[in-house]
Image (cartoon, rainbow, N blue to C red; front, side, top):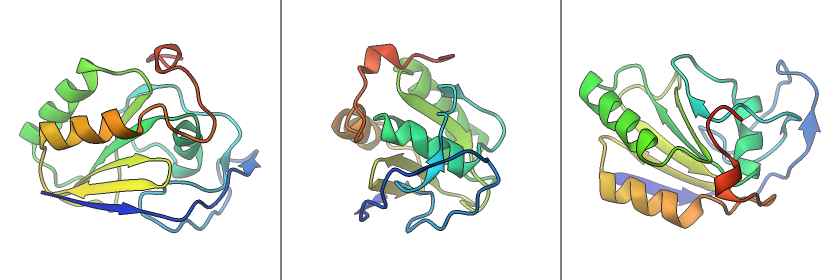
Length: 144
């Protein structure tokens, strides 16, 4: 139930402003210019600026986004999946996704209509910890 694509690497340039206007080759972004400080790892109830969270991908993180039309049932499944293994993970809503869910890693994007635990686990297993700046997954804990 997911569409998967690999995108060309757009580099790792840093900017100092969250208001920087950056053009990405994917939605949500999978690489490219981003804020110099990564987002604190965790689950968010509000949209996180793309220019900020791309830094987390650079460090090997996986980001799960969900659109505003995603059902409460699927949101609860995403929360449970996140809580099961939260290191190097971000979970946040994303305007423009509608009824879809996405998983991103550096240059990788899966877009899904529903929650598929085995597909999500396979994506996380394959790509978490594999950004261009590698950190130990155990060091990328929620709240850090």
